[in-house]
Length: 446
Image (cartoon, rainbow, N blue to C red; front, side):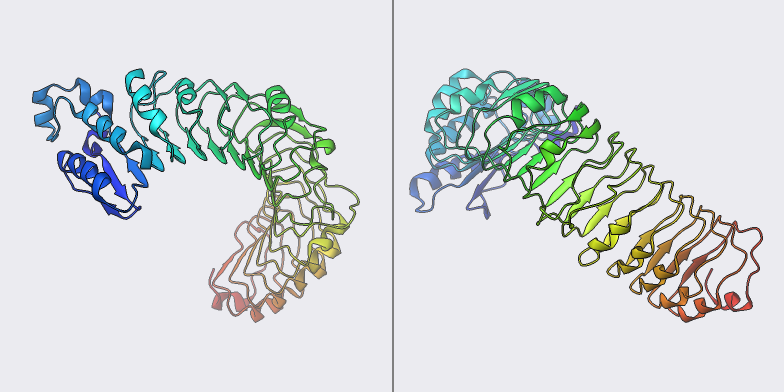
């Protein structure tokens, strides 16, 4: 039998603070009494980890063996009590059940009794159930819902009907179609880990009027080829997550309209060139994640630069870094460049003085510019598995360095200035077959 039985107790929460009783029957009696006598409204009624169908099919003997303090009519008892307090309920939690079919409350009879009374319901949580359709939401069309969580179900299609919605989570379903017409209120939409295609996203989502949308998550779908849109309906978008798809190109016509972006991620795709995201018009952009693609070059020139703090470019096919990288110096604190095909770095790279970590391992670097020693705030520097024959003479400028890994290069000497790195606790240099190890290294941690 399911291990979730151990959790099969309903929880009634008043003002998000008080749990009413430990046994179901006490709770059921208390919630009705409280709703009639208390001056405080019921703001949340949760039926968490309660499997209606499982309980319904357990024999009396099985329930006794599993120590279930329930009755034959337990399921209907719960729903009857919910009906009694429905007008005051702000939130309903029915996550981790085996709910399915076209009814929200098990049968159409209870939907008809309860749904019209949910005049105050703002949040409905139904994640981790077995719903294959959301037809039951039709019975809530007049309810002022602001948030619906239907993650981890088996939905294959979804139509947004409720115009009061602000947040909608449909991640981890099997959606191949998603329909939303003009919607003035929705701010956050999570469609990650479904089966949505590029065509459906461009025509059923990007071309719709969604003036309030701030966060759009499309991670782990079936987006392929080029993603583009000339629509200006997403101008207010602040976060766009396109990771774990099969995109080869992201059109300028789409990107150029998203000037309010703070977070842009398209990692784990098949992009062969960088989206046109390095431009001063993106005045709020702080995070760019483009790792694990096939990007072979960044733009040759840029018109200013956004205030990027985190830039992830690792696991691509970059052969060089453009000179303009120094334009990111005022804000850039984290850049990842490992697992590319870099042979050198520009001198301007040494102007990125806010960096505290620098990962350049698994490239094809043959030398490092002396200017890199201006990165005096570095605490970790990993440059193993390259083709370096020497390290910069002034590497001792890294006085805050605690870890230095230069394994598997072609080094023959270590600069004496490394002795200045008195905070260095890990220095790894294995695999440099022609290295003459200086005497001072014997006093340092390897």
